Length: 180
Figure (cartoon, rainbow, N blue to C red):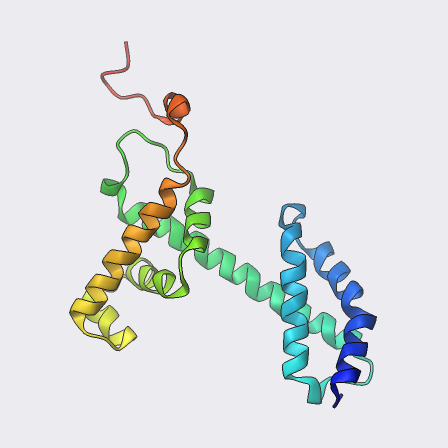
Protein backbone atom coordinates (compact mmCIF):
# COMPACT_ATOMS: atom_id res chain seq x y z
CA UNK A 1 0.00 0.00 0.00
CA UNK A 2 1.70 3.15 -1.11
CA UNK A 3 -0.69 6.06 -1.38
CA UNK A 4 -2.86 8.01 0.97
CA UNK A 5 -5.88 7.17 -1.20
CA UNK A 6 -5.21 3.44 -0.90
CA UNK A 7 -4.90 3.75 2.87
CA UNK A 8 -8.13 5.77 3.06
CA UNK A 9 -9.92 3.14 0.98
CA UNK A 10 -8.62 0.38 3.29
CA UNK A 11 -9.79 2.36 6.32
CA UNK A 12 -13.28 2.86 4.89
CA UNK A 13 -13.54 -0.77 3.86
CA UNK A 14 -12.35 -2.33 7.13
CA UNK A 15 -12.89 0.11 10.01
CA UNK A 16 -16.31 -1.28 10.94
CA UNK A 17 -15.01 -4.88 10.84
CA UNK A 18 -12.06 -3.99 13.08
CA UNK A 19 -14.42 -2.22 15.52
CA UNK A 20 -16.67 -5.31 15.64
CA UNK A 21 -13.64 -7.56 16.21
CA UNK A 22 -12.47 -5.39 19.10
CA UNK A 23 -15.96 -5.00 20.60
CA UNK A 24 -16.45 -8.77 20.73
CA UNK A 25 -13.26 -9.11 22.76
CA UNK A 26 -13.81 -6.36 25.29
CA UNK A 27 -15.89 -6.48 28.42
CA UNK A 28 -19.21 -4.68 27.76
CA UNK A 29 -18.18 -2.12 30.39
CA UNK A 30 -15.20 -1.23 28.16
CA UNK A 31 -17.28 -0.29 25.12
CA UNK A 32 -15.83 3.22 25.11
CA UNK A 33 -12.39 1.74 24.39
CA UNK A 34 -13.39 0.17 21.06
CA UNK A 35 -12.74 3.34 19.07
CA UNK A 36 -9.43 3.94 20.87
CA UNK A 37 -8.20 0.43 20.07
CA UNK A 38 -9.39 0.71 16.46
CA UNK A 39 -7.58 4.04 16.15
CA UNK A 40 -4.38 2.41 17.42
CA UNK A 41 -4.82 -0.42 14.90
CA UNK A 42 -5.10 2.00 12.00
CA UNK A 43 -2.26 4.15 13.33
CA UNK A 44 -0.09 1.05 13.25
CA UNK A 45 -1.36 0.24 9.77
CA UNK A 46 -0.43 3.75 8.65
CA UNK A 47 3.06 3.49 10.10
CA UNK A 48 3.55 0.06 8.52
CA UNK A 49 1.61 0.75 5.32
CA UNK A 50 4.49 -0.50 3.18
CA UNK A 51 4.07 -4.02 4.59
CA UNK A 52 0.27 -4.22 4.67
CA UNK A 53 -0.71 -7.22 2.53
CA UNK A 54 -3.07 -6.93 -0.45
CA UNK A 55 -5.86 -8.50 1.66
CA UNK A 56 -5.44 -6.43 4.83
CA UNK A 57 -8.31 -7.56 7.06
CA UNK A 58 -6.62 -10.62 8.63
CA UNK A 59 -3.46 -8.55 9.13
CA UNK A 60 -5.54 -5.79 10.79
CA UNK A 61 -7.12 -8.40 13.08
CA UNK A 62 -3.63 -9.52 14.09
CA UNK A 63 -2.68 -5.93 14.90
CA UNK A 64 -5.91 -5.53 16.90
CA UNK A 65 -5.13 -8.71 18.82
CA UNK A 66 -1.72 -7.35 19.82
CA UNK A 67 -3.14 -3.92 20.73
CA UNK A 68 -5.74 -5.60 22.96
CA UNK A 69 -3.03 -7.71 24.60
CA UNK A 70 -1.01 -4.56 25.28
CA UNK A 71 -4.11 -2.88 26.75
CA UNK A 72 -4.70 -5.86 29.06
CA UNK A 73 -1.09 -5.84 30.21
CA UNK A 74 -1.32 -2.09 30.85
CA UNK A 75 -4.48 -2.56 32.92
CA UNK A 76 -2.77 -5.30 34.93
CA UNK A 77 0.25 -3.04 35.54
CA UNK A 78 -2.03 -0.22 36.71
CA UNK A 79 -3.83 -2.63 39.05
CA UNK A 80 -0.53 -3.86 40.52
CA UNK A 81 0.63 -0.27 40.93
CA UNK A 82 -2.59 0.69 42.69
CA UNK A 83 -2.31 -2.33 44.98
CA UNK A 84 1.30 -1.50 45.72
CA UNK A 85 0.59 2.18 46.38
CA UNK A 86 -2.21 1.25 48.75
CA UNK A 87 0.00 -1.26 50.56
CA UNK A 88 2.97 1.11 50.79
CA UNK A 89 1.11 4.17 52.04
CA UNK A 90 -1.43 3.11 54.66
CA UNK A 91 -0.36 5.98 56.91
CA UNK A 92 -1.51 8.45 54.26
CA UNK A 93 -5.04 7.10 54.28
CA UNK A 94 -7.59 8.42 56.72
CA UNK A 95 -7.93 5.89 59.58
CA UNK A 96 -11.08 3.81 59.27
CA UNK A 97 -11.79 4.80 55.65
CA UNK A 98 -12.16 1.99 53.14
CA UNK A 99 -10.18 2.75 49.96
CA UNK A 100 -11.87 2.05 46.64
CA UNK A 101 -9.33 0.30 44.37
CA UNK A 102 -11.10 1.21 41.10
CA UNK A 103 -10.95 4.84 42.24
CA UNK A 104 -7.18 4.53 42.73
CA UNK A 105 -6.84 3.14 39.20
CA UNK A 106 -8.94 5.93 37.78
CA UNK A 107 -6.94 8.50 39.73
CA UNK A 108 -3.72 6.98 38.34
CA UNK A 109 -5.12 7.25 34.83
CA UNK A 110 -5.61 10.99 35.40
CA UNK A 111 -1.91 11.47 36.11
CA UNK A 112 0.64 12.28 33.45
CA UNK A 113 2.79 9.44 32.12
CA UNK A 114 5.83 10.92 33.91
CA UNK A 115 3.96 10.92 37.24
CA UNK A 116 2.81 7.34 36.62
CA UNK A 117 6.40 6.33 35.82
CA UNK A 118 7.96 7.84 38.94
CA UNK A 119 5.23 6.27 41.11
CA UNK A 120 5.76 2.92 39.40
CA UNK A 121 9.50 3.10 39.95
CA UNK A 122 8.92 3.74 43.65
CA UNK A 123 6.08 1.26 44.16
CA UNK A 124 6.72 -1.59 41.72
CA UNK A 125 10.46 -1.52 41.45
CA UNK A 126 10.92 -0.46 45.10
CA UNK A 127 13.48 2.17 44.12
CA UNK A 128 14.46 5.02 46.37
CA UNK A 129 15.11 8.55 45.14
CA UNK A 130 18.79 7.88 44.37
CA UNK A 131 17.96 4.92 42.13
CA UNK A 132 15.00 6.72 40.55
CA UNK A 133 17.42 9.54 39.70
CA UNK A 134 19.63 7.07 37.81
CA UNK A 135 16.66 5.69 35.85
CA UNK A 136 15.30 9.15 35.03
CA UNK A 137 18.74 10.66 34.42
CA UNK A 138 18.26 13.50 36.84
CA UNK A 139 19.66 14.54 40.21
CA UNK A 140 18.63 12.82 43.43
CA UNK A 141 16.90 15.98 44.61
CA UNK A 142 15.00 16.29 41.32
CA UNK A 143 13.90 12.65 41.62
CA UNK A 144 12.77 13.24 45.21
CA UNK A 145 10.81 16.30 44.15
CA UNK A 146 9.22 14.50 41.20
CA UNK A 147 8.19 11.61 43.44
CA UNK A 148 6.80 13.97 46.07
CA UNK A 149 4.83 15.95 43.48
CA UNK A 150 3.50 12.78 41.86
CA UNK A 151 2.30 11.53 45.25
CA UNK A 152 0.63 14.89 45.93
CA UNK A 153 -1.10 14.80 42.52
CA UNK A 154 -2.25 11.23 43.18
CA UNK A 155 -3.73 12.28 46.53
CA UNK A 156 -5.43 15.24 44.83
CA UNK A 157 -6.82 12.99 42.13
CA UNK A 158 -8.05 10.60 44.82
CA UNK A 159 -9.82 13.50 46.53
CA UNK A 160 -12.12 13.63 43.50
CA UNK A 161 -13.36 10.17 44.53
CA UNK A 162 -14.03 10.94 48.20
CA UNK A 163 -17.60 10.19 49.17
CA UNK A 164 -19.87 13.18 49.87
CA UNK A 165 -20.03 14.15 53.58
CA UNK A 166 -23.54 12.71 54.10
CA UNK A 167 -22.39 9.26 52.98
CA UNK A 168 -19.18 9.14 55.01
CA UNK A 169 -20.73 6.92 57.64
CA UNK A 170 -21.33 4.18 55.06
CA UNK A 171 -17.68 4.25 53.96
CA UNK A 172 -16.02 4.32 57.37
CA UNK A 173 -15.04 1.20 59.20
CA UNK A 174 -16.15 1.17 62.82
CA UNK A 175 -13.70 2.60 65.28
CA UNK A 176 -13.45 1.50 68.92
CA UNK A 177 -15.13 4.77 69.98
CA UNK A 178 -18.09 4.22 67.65
CA UNK A 179 -18.87 0.66 68.74
CA UNK A 180 -21.43 0.61 71.59
